[in-house]
Figure 1: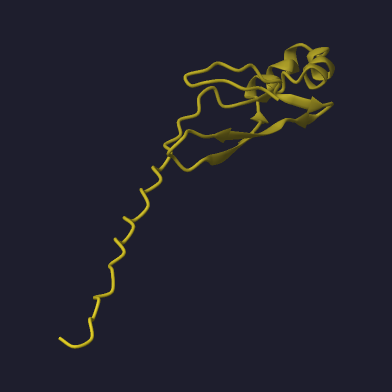
Figure 2: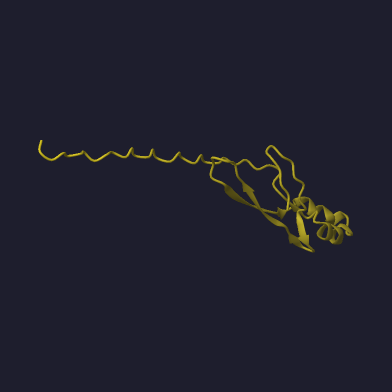
Length: 100
């Protein structure tokens, strides 16, 4: 788990095991705004196909996670939480005096 304050750079491994890409849930939050979760999946790195010319890379890249990539940048807009409605002012009941 990592924590940062935007703008932040957080380095995450793109692989989660041999031939398995990593997947992360990123939570953005700020006081006065609705927090949001963002799913950050890994995707296939096309450069892995370059291993056709480097046979040993077919085994090394899956082990190191180099066959997967993550998005380099996340841009998120948090919606502002609307202020609560104003509280009604309590009104006093009129006092009725007998005999008037």
